[in-house]
Image (cartoon, rainbow, N blue to C red; front, side, top):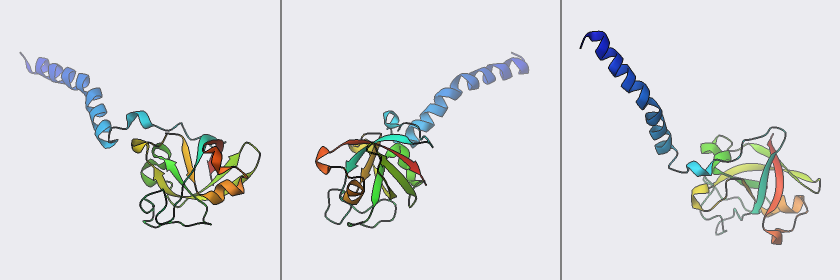
Length: 151
């Protein structure tokens, strides 16, 4: 086979294998939570489910917050975002505005990831009790629809 033939053959093989190479790389970096992509962030208000978390030492949040390695006792207004929205920490320390269907809203700081690989849904804003009180929501409800935006 002449040089051009060999080149075309190699080029053809490279092209056919590129997509699978890209996918393999993406999978390994994602730690295989490919089905845990969060809904797209909407600047006008991203729909989410508000859940309750205790960010204090000994609370149900477990270890210290991923963003700053600290615990956040009440009355701090803090949240953990689902893995997709947490996005390896790009929103750490940033403030978000959370709005409930009753029209009330409040502001809280992103301090942690609600890990979609360990039972957290992909559309959760996991918030401290102060956030629930600000919004006049009943923590007994467990899961309440809200929208949120980055400030």
